[in-house]
Length: 111
Length: 112
Image (cartoon, rainbow over all chains, first blue to last red):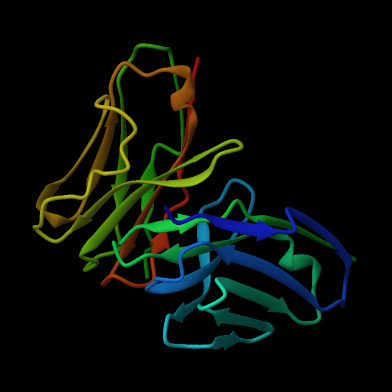
């Protein structure tokens, strides 16, 4: 059974810092991996999707990497801003059309 | 364009009552998913619809839960004889194919 773990569970940083969020999964047979952000009381917003054949994806200040063989992904956020404060979730698509989510990292960026 | 919409946004019900939660996917998206987000449990898959194929119901926690998708568009998740452990945020997502999923804002269900 696929299990997804995210570390740390919570992170508090001052504005401007670069930071890394970690995601690990137990079964490397994945179709793709997706990073989402969730704001309080809101749904999920897709940030980046990495196909199993890819190593990384970039969007603006965000960069996500994937090492399928070791079961790891990282989300790098450059020059963090208070507006980045949210919960970040990674989710693995095992190919059976349902995502297996991690428990998330709660990020707080202070001005 | 319009995203995934869900109604109601909040629902408070008494234990034992039935509830219906509605999801309007993005127009043209063939795939539709329901997830549940419980406090301390994270997000868990419930059910998946793809076109006219039989739905994947493998995530439904009990036979009190059911879902249908009419005309390949709107979906309704029904919970019969609600229990307190059913309290959660129910999220719907749609996808143009089996790739990026676009989520709605969710319905927060509270069972008293």
